[in-house]
Length: 216
Picture 1: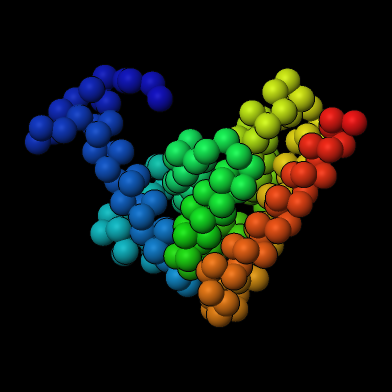
Picture 2 (picture 1 turned 180 degrees about the horizontal axis):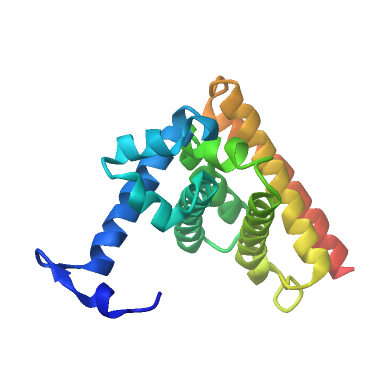
């Protein structure tokens, strides 16, 4: 972000850049609430501005349109999930069972908030080619995180940059996302531990098969 003379001016103890950052955060929070509870189509400029308590002039300046806001909200939620997963995986032992349990528990705890689930797995789909591309890139980021977390199991072999490993990671991420989506759509009918146990069998079974294949 360029720091123009205007951006360095201070009003009431705050620079222009700081004030714009606060407005942006307020819009993103408003978008999170509206998109997460009522859906993307309900998050009109008027509704978002009313929720944030800020005029539409700043909305257009910061986001351009509602798709720009959707992207910002999705990126914020995805970043929060990524941080939660990284923390859980870093705290877990290197055994595949421990890593799997830690990652799944962090993921499903995050998706227990139906606003997160709706934004991450429903409202982001089918909006535009740009948004779909963002969704796919984000899925790849989570796949890379998964492969990297498991890399101590096979040093020098589980390289997330290798196409076959990347595809394997994406397949696992896809399976987990599908399970989480079905769980959320059911109104979280099944106990969280039951859902985690089902995914655990899939993930650990797939990892063992993968390691056997790489080791042969």
